[in-house]
Image (cartoon, rainbow, N blue to C red; front, side, top):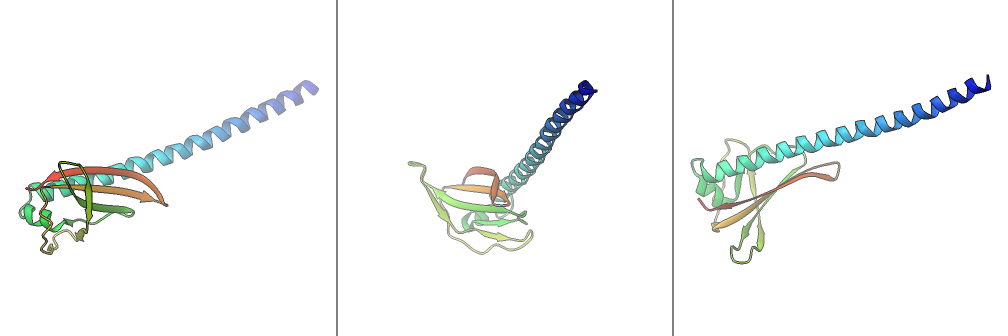
Length: 137
């Protein structure tokens, strides 16, 4: 009877340890899923900017105005700045985010090289950050 009681206690301890590990695994899986989703959103937004500023009609005007036609996902922040090719120094500039199909204001940020940074955050934690440097079209 005592041996049975001891084996039940040992089994209970092992089950508690396994259950705790499973909870951690589920939490890590959820965190990884959020990171993958954030990376996908950031990549899509970066590709949208690249397309608008290099190949779309009016690419030079959008580039010079720091104008991006997009619906930003929740937690997304886009920053743009001029890059000095000689030093690599980055000077932040204002960005115009307009709805898809909207019109961009005129702008005079006609630097030869710009750096675009897209970050996606959730709950105060940055999940993804992508950087792209584009030459003036």
